Image 1: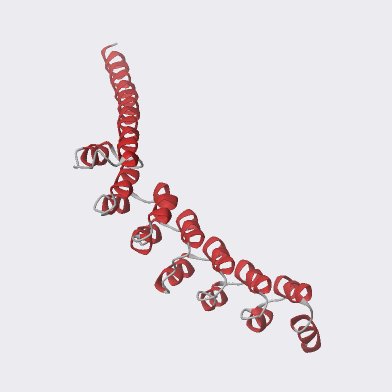
Image 2: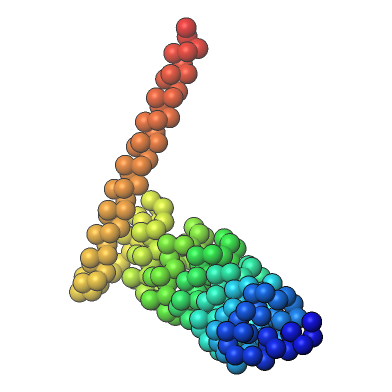
Length: 205
């Protein structure tokens, strides 16, 4: 077994990747810090949390992206604790993380409007509420268009520069969002009213 381990973990790249998938903790221990990023990527994808946590500071973003997708929430928290700032990694934390993890993403991406744009539709209500205080008006509008009726109306009432064409156009999206939420609310209320009337009719017969 020791000779097999040695052959796998010191062979060519394909052999080392095979070792990750066909082996276990001994192979992961030998290869989690391998010089080949594809080998480390295999460990990030296949190994358990113990080894994924060791890789949170991997220098190659594609490896950390795999950790964000296939790791546990503890691994995603460790990435954030390590100061993760790569847009793709943060987006995948948003896609696959729990609500608790997603709350932390606003702080991680606060100074990067492009990342905020990528993750905003994954954010829970409390995180969207925090974004309504962002100094960038575009970030506020984008958060509101994924939020509630109240959030949309509050952002729509905020002062803005009429010379900022992007903001002017984005405000139209807020109006559309309010109209959509109005339609949804009307349908829900109609359904409730209809159900209540049916129940009253049944009780009266």
